[in-house]
Amino acid sequence: MQIRTASGGERPVLHLSLADDREERPSAVNTFAHAAFNCTGRAEFERHLKSLGIPYRTASVPLLNIAQFFFHDPAGNGVELQFDANEPSG
Image (cartoon, rainbow, N blue to C red; front, side):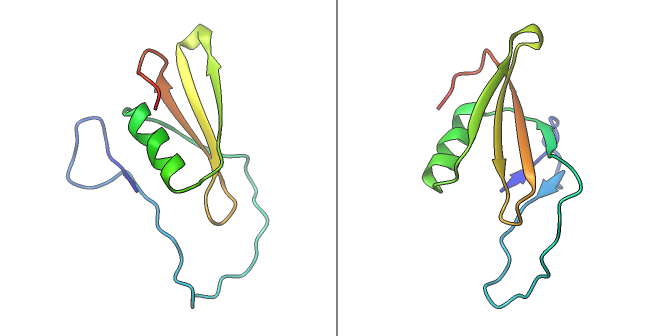
């Protein structure tokens, strides 16, 4: 999954990937609650999370007109995706 700038630049702002099954990673304690990203394509992201079976929860911030998805990456880090609440959901 890649998240790009609003201008659709050539390089992703964030690139998420799974570790190889043979890759050893030390266990670590998270030092932050989550990373948050402003996104577009709410319905597409929600369908993607569902298709991968990734558990997530939703929330809204009516005062800011924001819809949010919260989930954890494979390493256990919290991720928050923020969308314009007027975008359709998936």
